[in-house]
Length: 528
Ligand code: TNX
Image (spheres, protein in one colour):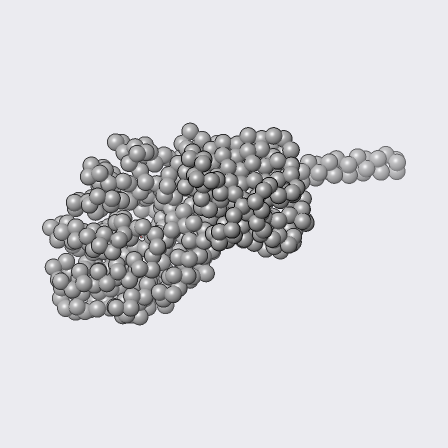
């Protein structure tokens, strides 16, 4: 009896141990590179069935002396150091370094044209991980792939146990669209520089390259303008619900721009006009047709405010704002808003938008505007951001404009996942994680094809979003899907395959401390 019992116990113990071994080893790096769960899914992966591993002596070698190359190498070193506990250095090597290292090289004279400006090639053999690209931006994108090939705990900020293995093989990868963005509304609720930096890091992980900041609205003005100081000082004092608001000084804005730049992310500033301007109208009486300043506003209704389109000073104001903000913004675009100007007459709106386009172009920037601007005469090079009105998008294309795709029904990060979601709105519908993923910017609107589309942008409006944890809950896990729509060719995208890769990101979300919505549609591989 006693013997039988202990036999049973031993067998049970063995079975449990075997199961545990299986579970833990399935969480380990696969030796088949083609099974790696990378988001966005790379254009091509070939596995060779072995392993490369980071070791205590691993260093990052760069070929060439440029500061940018060093900086990109250092970014990777900093990501790997904390969790591995290895003292990874960035060194220069003209020829292939020894075993166990990572080698970053720029191809000479753009010698791999297929990779374009942001593509990369990653060749991993058992001795070396070699990343090459035409540009440092391409290397930076490839570094995100290296991160995702390593075990998820590579993202932890404290020392973890290895092994730090990557399957061997080759990845060749480049984006489908040149503009892959996220918009953040910092006007309805203000977000600190630290919060914006955290968001920029998320975008970087998934190879996104634009952060559009909605810097002004009825409820708040968020950027210091030295020639019109009351905009920020007075107009920055409020936010939805009556909180204290806030604004970025020009130095802080530049800090955000530079932080993004180091991650090859462009900041697109938006000053919404002629509607959505109550914060400005409350700050300067002379901008109002009545000559009287309005009251600050903390509600969420839209469409009641308008700049006074017939006043000369309105254009002086716009010129000053565009000039100061353009000087702080190295990226090519200036976003003029133009949406929901319900209290501006059509006959005033059209000449207004025409004039504002000229002002922006005179300051050396390309005009971006919501699709509403298509009723005016779009100047060459203007981009219309499609959010709601399909007719406007078609009119913009009819005028030769490119479209940035942000259809509210698919790409609005403030739309609730389903009826049970507490945060967010649902005026454009509920957007579950599958619905957010299953659409194609190149055939979303009849008559608008890939050649008319600049890219995709997901937008987080913040009427109901008050802090970083809430922001994370609305953007994760939809954000990686938008990144994939922008990067991966449509032929490589399929929800039933994608959801498995997304499920594997849970461990990374956890390691990064991300508060995400655990949709039941996704086979999550780690518990929250
Ligand atoms: C529509 S998108 C707006 C925003 C709101 C958003 C809320 C756009 C161009 N206008 O002002 O914040 O809906 O979902």
